[in-house]
Length: 281
Image (tube, rainbow, N blue to C red):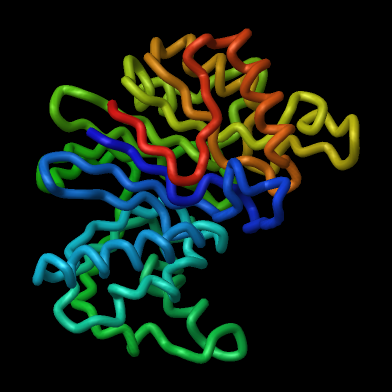
């Protein structure tokens, strides 16, 4: 498998020269194997990926075909979808899978449609001419998607979130963004997803000081982890490599580099996810 990071930022996109090295787009990760791909979440990083996919399809005389897996429906994980160019092209085939909001009242299709309505957006979801097939995922489901086997589990986040374990070619990638691991307890569902993963992509939005509120509001209960707890999850589950992910929008390149260096003192195979980087799993 190959994993490419198209958006690694959490909460809100950011820009400027101090953030250019890590990247400022919100969550979007591409997983490829055997000529097929999964797209994890549709943050602002999806726009650039969509442009690339459309260009490749035109050059090759073929149509775009992709499966998008959504972890949850918070805005920073869906806000790139209105700018996903292939979705406006007739003949594009999109499978869109994700959870409903807790209680099942708002589906993935509902959430994507609502953000594309006035006064927030002038172009409706119905204007997207692609063949769009929506499906609702529940915790505990196992999916066979082309060469990929995908396991879904509920993790800890306000309004809920799904974590994914993606297996293909004898390798495993665990995608555990927007999950809050407390210093004294690791979610059993997360342990199950991440156990022995070749690559663990884990929420690492805060420092310990930020989480405790030493420099402002206490972040406990906000649904995100510290990089130290991400390292602990990697160590306990026996993950081979750890990608620190969902960087805080206030953490510039220098801060992320400092976090990365300190994280390696906790878990030697830790690294900061950076936009545009491709990892061979």
